[in-house]
Image (tube, rainbow, N blue to C red; front, side, top):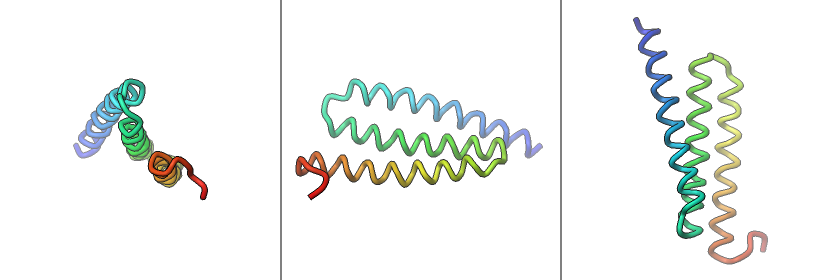
Length: 93
């Protein structure tokens, strides 16, 4: 019984995360300001990271968790660099 519940929960999570990615993509392309696009990009990497974790839980392979860790690290650095660029106009001082 618990395997069925786990499979159902992972499947529902995948569908909801895919729907969130679609809505985030709409915000990235239609966002009225650059700040909105950066926040949407931040949400996109977090959602992609969670989607990879759900794939890892569903398949039982560890490569998805490692990819999620890499996306998390690169996404954080990208968000900080873009925020600094919007604040000062340059990334490297």
